[in-house]
Each structure stands twice: as C-alpha cells, then as structure tokens.
Length: 364
Length: 128
Image (tube, rainbow over all chains, first blue to last red; front, side, top):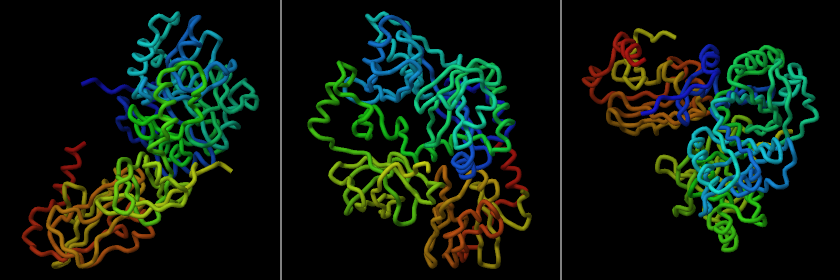
C-alpha cells in the first residue's frame, strides 16, 4: 500500500476546519463549511481551490509540437504563445487516456496539466510516445502548487495582489506575473462555469499566496471550496470528469467532446478509430437530464426507457444553483432527444427524468 | 452537540426515543455532520413493516446516499413529512425536528440490543 500524498496546503485546510478525504491518492479537503454554501459562494462571490494534486508534465525540445500534437486530439499547431488549449488524449482505439490542458510556453516548450489520479499513467504514456522523438519529458508535479480562484469577484481580488494586468488575459490564455510578490503563471481557466483564474507557483509559496488571497478577498466574500462543491459546480456547467463522462472505454466523441477532436489534422493517437466511429455513427451519446420525480441520480445508476436498459448515469447530483436534481448519462443514441422521458433506476425503482439542454447552468 | 441522555443509540449513528411501544427514530448529530448537506429523504410508507436491520429510509446528501436501518422490527406508524420539503431539518436539528419516523415496536425485547448514551459515546471515541 502506498501512503497518501498531501499538498503543501494540507495544514492550511486542516486549520480552516476542512473535512479531509482520500482522492486519487491524495488527502484532500472535501468541504469546509458545507457543499451548498461553498457552491453558492463561488457562484455569487469567489471561491479559492487547492488543485495542487493535479499533475504537470513539461515537454521541451525540437519535436515538442509534433509530439504533443500526436498525443492529443485537439490541434496544438494553431496555438499562439501564452494560449491554453483543452484536449482529450486518446489511445489507438479511441478510448481516453486523460483530458488535459496544454499551455504553450514557447514554440518548443509545452506545459501540460493532467488529472491527479492519472498523472503517473499519463507520464508513462508520454514516455512511451516520446520514443524516437527529440523531446525531453519531465513530470514536474511536485514542483508546482496550483490554486484556482473562481467566481464573479475573482478578477477584482486577484488584481489587488498582482502586477499582471488581468483584464488583458482572455479566456483560455495565460501570462506571467507576480502574485503576492512571487513569480507565477496565471491563466484565465477553471472548472466551475464561472470566470476565474488558475495560478501556478513553486510549492513553498503556496500557503503564503492562499492566505493573501483569503485576506484580500475577505470583504468580497472569498471562501475556500472543497472537492464536493468543485464537483457540483463543474457538473452544472457540464464540464466532464475523467472516469465518468469519458474513460478508456468512452470516446471523446461519445462524451460530446467532438469540438476538441480535430479529425482533419494529421495523424494522432486514436485518429483512425475516431474517424471510423464518426463515419459509422455514434451508438451512444452523453445526454444531460433532470429528475421529474423525486430522487437523486448517482454515477452508475442504470437508465431505462419502457423498462429496457438504455444506458447509465455518468455523474449526478443535487444542483444547488438550479435547485434541481440533475445528471449526465451515456445512453443509446436513438433515445437522445431533448424533452424525451427516461427513467433513472434508483434502488430498483424507475424514477422519471427528462433529457434537457446543457449546460444546466450558464453564468449571467 | 451532546447526545441526549434519554435516548437509545445504534452503532449506525441512529437515535431511538422509546415511548411505550412506539420508537421515534432519527440520526445523530454526528451522522448528519458526516453526511453534510441533506437534500432529500426517502421515507417509507405508513403501515409498512420492517424487521430489525432492514433499510427503512434513505437520506441523500449532496455527496452520497446513506441508509437508515430499522433499529428494531416494527410497523411504520408515522413519518416526518416535513422532511419532504425541508430535508435540511436533519442538519439543523438532528435530535428534534429532524426525526425521521415512528415504528410500532413488535418485540420490546429487541430494545436490549440498543446502546445507551454512554455506550454510544464510547463508540464515537474509539471509532476516531
């Protein structure tokens, strides 16, 4: 048994009264004051998240572009300097290894942020694919603290403690700047459906920056947010979670991530399988639904229609911003149409739900 | 919050107030705190019969679902319908307004299996 890892902010969370749980090999805060309160604070004011458990893989060298572009399904070639790109990363069979963010640091340098629980697997996958390429691949995950500040007040709070003009950073771009006097990478990215930033710094500066943000944003309502509310926030915004909406057996096309799969770009891992899947037509699709009858859908509950099983729930929860019970489900394509009725099998009872447009929540 | 002395408890963090042959049942403050925000409670039908240890209700928090087990066997006499609209009563007042159901106890001998407040308190300390 391997021991659980802790981020440099672990003590900060404990002091703040967080409940700690195991997540992807890490001891992480699941909540501080309560999931609903944290969720609402992030939507209405600002939330600060410790996402240091995420992995960072650094790719440098003459073949960096060619290498990353072979790994991911989105098109890295079109990226400008200081741009971020979201992309699935596939196996040859079209199943997903992980979904990730690519930061373009230089023409021959990309910084890649991956899911915590997949970091080791991804790093191995990168190394396997690097054979014969002139690139240097480093897993630098333990040299980085990542803090997310999200919500309508995020920019105002962060601007007070950085020399970087945040208004110049567009959505899915980044810049370098000092936060609380410390060299940082600041990107306008996030996983909540709100405007906000993700900040990358060396581990020793994490607690200082966290405390400074809390102090600076106190009057504007900044609160720490645990993994519990992170999940409800991302689900309302229909942001996918690896292992749920996509996995080694659920392709990005099935997960509704087709706009991040550039089938026209030159060869990349999974291209042949994905082209074939698209040509043959998708047999399963991801659909958003809300409960019509009372009940809360949870991952893996079966979805039925007229008593016949047609799929399963990939993620489900009470949605605090909507005051509804919602979910995403992977179901047989012929049953996916907005407004159509389905049933979620909750404790052996079919409870009525209907397919709805997504995202469930869009910021005003 | 302190566990009231006049109640009986189970290792599953439920409390029982015995009123003759009636058992009022809820979950303890420790339980509601572990669950987090309660957003839905699935209550049994009045008149349904359960044996001791059977799942009699389900409490859904944002995070997960938790079963409530019948601490003793019996027939459901009442359910707390206020929980249908305000399930958060379980978080706000676990030992009071957050009560879940009342069972007509079929065998009062089963009450001997329940824990006293001291025994429950000891279990909490040892469990941590």
